[in-house]
Image 1 (cartoon, rainbow, N blue to C red):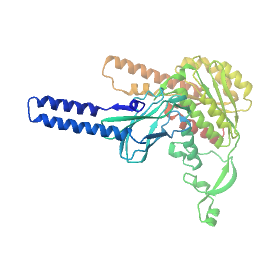
Image 2: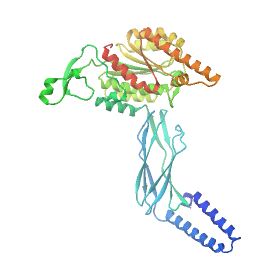
Image 3: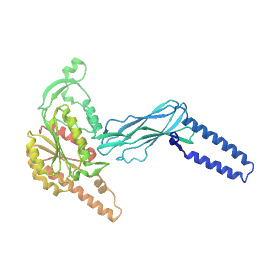
Image 4: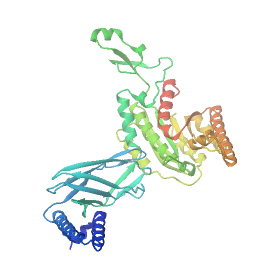
Length: 442
């Protein structure tokens, strides 16, 4: 009885049954066809019995193992893998039904593979989560068939929960290219250093992208390899990421919110900061300051920042910049470089907070991030064909113009500014950090 619950009839079964019934119906009008119909029926019944026996008799079974990562990377394509093992002594066709987490809203959750006797196979696919939190995978089911009339179901996995963290895949990619001096491949600019306030550190072998003016020809002649002088930058400078948790950061772009883009950029920037021997810190705020991690460069600093960013949620209050200034003034004593991830949509909203930002800018270097509204810019560039589309285009141009006024107002008041599309935020943040370091502003 237990095995019968695993039995499923396929469309092929019903189509073949319909075909035999049609053949019997036609045989009433064609007498010689009646015997043929019975022969076909008994052959069909024999195949059905054989198909049932080979699927359910013996110890044949299908096992599926989830080779999923311990955690997911938010906003990235995560590689996922299912390992399928067949213990049948004959070739089989296997359909796999994976119960994906409800956050993904995936409907096409079927995979199929053909396996020979006692063979194993891997099914790989990519999954892009767009929310932080726990992703719960349900049961993973396998439907196996031999001749296609019946399917036997195997439920091979129980519920599995995987946490989704800020973009650690992006972090690893930047870290790997940074160690091999290939960040320019991602769009990280090499900043020309004005003057030479850095002290000589050591001589090392030339790698692609090094400045030719630092070539050490004496060392090159001795070693018969291209050698360059390595200079030491000023280190242990505090770099903070201030993240606004207000409702304006809920605006979505390409499945992620502005808050998620800010979190991913903060994580990568903090890691780049520690790699450059500076100190990374974090502060999140809305009506009150929610999380504060003092700037350090200890071994566990990235873990603390990652765990704090994982638990960040949007608050639906207006951010209080007065409380932000008071808290920063009390807890951040050394002059720091501060990246402020917020979203000013109107010039009036900026001017209401300008006094607090200006006071903060006197003690620190404030880099204000202004997000481009990519969808509005696409609307402004479109070719209108109807009257309503002309009105929409004019309104879109007004929003773009106001964003440009916000950037000009920030620059006029002495702020460093990043005006960027959300998907380019990480690269532009690192470029601005390297630029400020190169100019010796901090």
